[in-house]
Structures are given as C-alpha cells and as structure tokens.
Image (cartoon, rainbow, N blue to C red; front, side, top):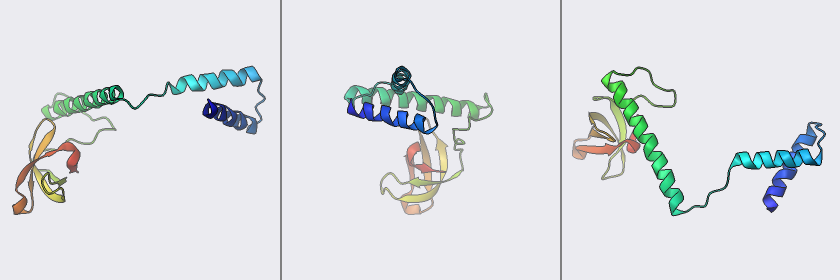
Length: 136
C-alpha cells in the first residue's frame, strides 16, 4: 500500500510539473486507471512457472511451424522478429554438448528442435545441438 501511494505521488508531481491542474477526484481516477492497466502482481509459484512454460512452448511451436512452412515453400516472407531459419550446409558457431565450449561447425541435418552439427575439429565429431546453443 505504501509503494502504491508513493507511485501516486510521483504521478501527481509529474503532472504538476507540466502545469496540469488536477482535482483530487481526477488524481484518484488516474491512479486507479494506471493500477488497473498494470494488472495484478503474480506470485512466483509452481502454477505460475507451469503457465509461463506452456506459453513459451506454444510460442516455440508456432515459430517451428512457421519455419517448416517457409522451408517447404508454402509460405513466403518472415516476420521481422524472427531470425532466418538455418539450412543444411550453413556455417554456425555452436556450443558443443559434451565439452560446453564454443566451436565452429556446419549444419548437417535440420530436425524439429535440434540440429546435427559437424564440428570443424575432427576430435569433436558430429553432435545433435539444441537450437538455443547455436549462434548464427
């Protein structure tokens, strides 16, 4: 409650600095409007984590389906917030799954959520690498 009052005072000072004359009712209405637009704070609980993980998985699945449509040729164009999909033969920098070190390599196969990467150093061989461990 104290933090919300401090927040309301900051808003009031901000508006008064621009010469806006306010009536107390309008300040209260503005404060309630801002508080309602911020939403209710969530507790860091297991249910919260489950919901956030589900949202993340839905987003990942939509991106994968979008990439699959582009690679198959049924869809053209890419939204500005998505990176170009990797293709076979493309040079990448990847984190090796066993050594956890960054190495150069090239993509051999494109799978659903992972790529088979052949590393340049022969002793590292060929490994499946998750998308999150690839640098383009």
